Image (cartoon, rainbow, N blue to C red; front, side):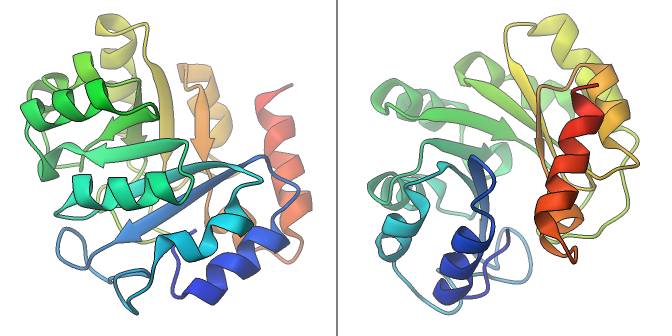
Amino acid sequence: MIPQSEGEVTEYAQRLNFAKEFHLDVVDGVFAPKATWPYQPEGKPLNVKQYLDVYTLEVDLMTTQPVQAAEQWIKAGADMLVFHVETLSVEVLKNFTEETPVSVGVSCSGATTMDTFAQYLPYADYVQLMGIYQIGAQGQPFDETVFEKITYIKEHYPHLAITVDGSVNQDTIGRLKAAGVDRFVVGSAITLQDDPESAYTALNTLINE
């Protein structure tokens, strides 16, 4: 989910309790447009810990100060963190992964080359590839170039699990699974449906047939 308020996080946490994992996008409005809670309005991640502790919590750090944000979210119970390579150096990522107990994934925007992205991969626990070109908003068209990136990762870093986030839905999830994707971050194809649990079940069926 892309939280607009603290209350929305708690509402979604209770409404989506049929799932085991919870992926939270946090956007500072600088790295990507449309700032979200806890940047706008300002808030404290620790306030939602009690609601999210029942999940494996993954926080996607779309912020120009990702390490500072990461420290706050670890205190709030994050189990997995996604860093966008445009926001930090390879050295900073390396130092962070050596010092933190949580799983660290790396991601990049559509404009970032694979040569640049690859410099970060030796220090990541997993990879999050974007199924959309412009990050920070749900409902965007699917970016077909993600399949080239999947192929590259599987050939050069086969030990890294691959997540795809963005435009994952009934039309794309089967193709992504066939290409070798391990995890799927689904937004509007679940959260904006009349029956989110049924949508979740249907998508699970497509990747487990």
